Structures are given as structure tokens and as C-alpha cells.
Length: 121
Image 1 (cartoon, helix red, strand yellow):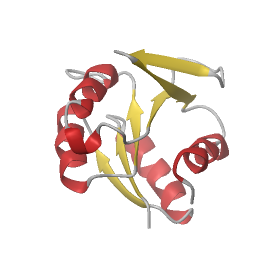
Image 2 (cartoon, one colour):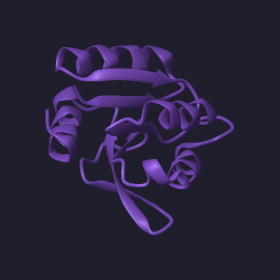
Image 3 (spheres, rainbow, N blue to C red):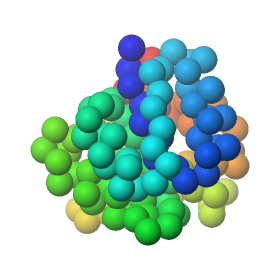
């Protein structure tokens, strides 16, 4: 079973998307801030990370930068989640890499489709 880590400070959203992903057959863990997300990613070695862009203290870009410094996580696919944009084709650059971003306000099938494209079912 593929493992997904959600790093998002909005607990209600995290629980809701975890339910969606669990029903789709994924093993899902949650971290409610960037620092906890880096630690959890390092311990569970997820197949994919869903990353909130805007979080207090350590935002999504800073969190991704720290995750990419861990050798075993440097190739883990990351999808940013944002409530700021409604566009479906947003890319967020972090250092020398571009990451897809999906609006939290969109249909959950869009998030599932992106996940399926990156890691399968």
C-alpha cells in the first residue's frame, strides 16, 4: 500500500482529505506543521507528500527545502495544496525544482488524479 504524508496546519482539512485518500486505498499520515512534517517524513519515508503552502513558522516552501536535504527523501513527489488559487495549472518553484499545486477548493478527484499520475494507485 502506498504511503502519503499530509503536512497541513488546518486539522479539519487534513482529516477530511485523509478520509478521501484512505478510501482510495492509501496509507495516510498527518503532520500539522512544517517541522513535524520534516520529522515524520524522515521516519515514515512516504511515497508522496501533500504540502500546504501557507503555514505559520515553517511554510511549505521552507519545509520542502528541508525535506529535500534528506537524502532518502530527495526524490519523493510533492504536491502543494493551496487555498489561494483556483487555477488547475499552478507550479510552485522551490530552489531548482518546480512542484505542482492543487487548490484545496477544487474537487477531490483532481487531487486524486494528480496522485495517481505521480505514484499510481
